Amino acid sequence: MRKRMLANVLIILLLFLLFAVGPSIYQNQSLIFQMMVFMALAQGVNILYGFTGYLPFGYVGFFGIGAYGAAIAVNLLHVPALVAVILGGFSALLAGLVLSPLLRLSGAYFSIGSLAASEILYNVVSNDSLQPITGGPYGVNLAGIFDEQTSYVVMLLLLVLATAFVTYLRSSRFGMSLIAIREDPVSAEMAGIHVVRTRVFVWLATAVLAGLVGATYAWHISVFYPNTVFDLSVSIFAIVFTLFGGGTTVLGPVVGTILLYGLYNAIGISSPQYFQLIYGVLIMALVLFLPNGLMSLLTRRGIYVP
Amino acid sequence: MAKLFRATQLDVGYGKMQILWDIELEVNQGERVLVLGPNGAGKSTLLQSLVGLMQIWRGQIFYHEDPIQNLRIDHRIRKGISFVSELGVVPSLTVEDNLRLGGYYSSKREVLQRMEEMYEEFPAIKEKRKALAGSLSGGQRKMLSTAKALMSHPQLLIMDEPSSGLAPLLVTEVIQILSRFQKQGLSFLIAEQNVKFLDIADKVYVLDAGHIAFSGTVEELKMNDALNRAYFGVSGHSS
Image (cartoon, rainbow over all chains, first blue to last red; front, side, top):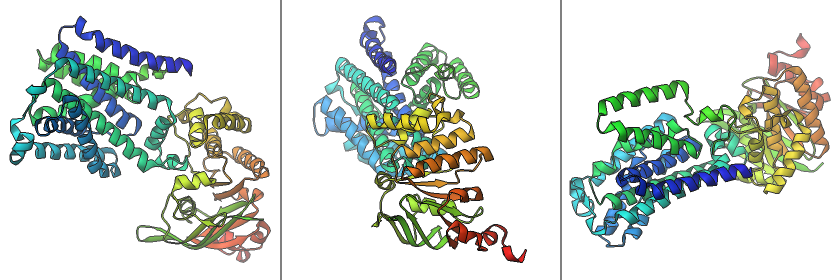
């Protein structure tokens, strides 16, 4: 038990060090920042799908709402950047509360429902008549608060926080209750777990995480459009990275993001046609041979993966 | 004997379809009560409505003479009612974690202590404590689901078909284990179609097409046609 705890703490520490010293080793800070964004989102998907069984194709909706919540807070309320980030998370929390009836759905119905919800949020934000508030289709400019360094540090803290939360789920009774709910809600209920309240809590926690990440992303890039922060590929990437590495583990989404986002940056931008091909083959191989992700190569052999 | 659990005038159904009519049922402290009936008689529906997994249409449920029909399931569990469904375990958790889940509301110390007690009662799962519940045999799973339900120190254990999928030898083992716990003061309400459970029953209810067709002792049942009618649709005396 103590060894497992040590392994979990080590992962968080290594992750922190990797991204803390990353910019001084590798020049492209933007890539490292984006990698942190996807890793944090992948941990969000991990919590929601890996532990609770809800595959959120519309997860990007919370990310986008977080970005716009922060942007509106800066442009209309003139609050400092850090307060705007918190308000971005709060906006996502409100969106999560409004969308919580989606949790009554399951399987593909939930995935499609969440996707539709994110499309609705996108269409509301990009509506021309909301231009004075959201900037409509013309996007948002946050050049006044642009701060590459501080936003990087905040993103790093968010990533550490998200990873620490997954670590907690991995070793706590609460995390166990989520797995029980995912596999057999009746059995979980009969253990005395309040299934509905637990599901809603996790849904809102992951919404806030995506909202905070979205808000920090907005702060970091400072100029963006609705289709930048409501891009479906954000959800897809976060889901694929999680599944590739292996859900219900701390390490899975970390490894998945480093490998696949690294691959995307190595060949995806210069030779997108090869990237699509390699990506497709990798996903097919994963589905066929490793449906529980890369980490299952170890867990199958009885090796504990944090 | 003091009354522990009682249901009166219970009507239950799915949507607009009624499944159970006017159910009257009682479990006294330390009693082993058996609900017998063939497939489709409404046994599982009855148990699910008693523990709160299904809404009841009409009637009342009492525990220690307090009405509990409006209580949430987790509150019923904390009061001392435990339920073993036909599956009853979480396959992707280890045996140990399943037991921990059973003691969800107990302190860590209590859980560890109770876990050791369960391992003593169910040695078959002790050997597999680190194995995933999904890798256990049907019999071991049944032991685990019973042990998991017992982790919360219940006063009343409600079990849905504990013999389903088990070899006759294992059924006898389950019966022996349940008898041991009864001696410790635990009460049972067991829904079964296996009449072997009559060996341990203090009281029997025969459920036939959603109605209580018989209630009484095992001896009284032996002199009654209700079981033949429920299982074979015929009177025992006419054959």
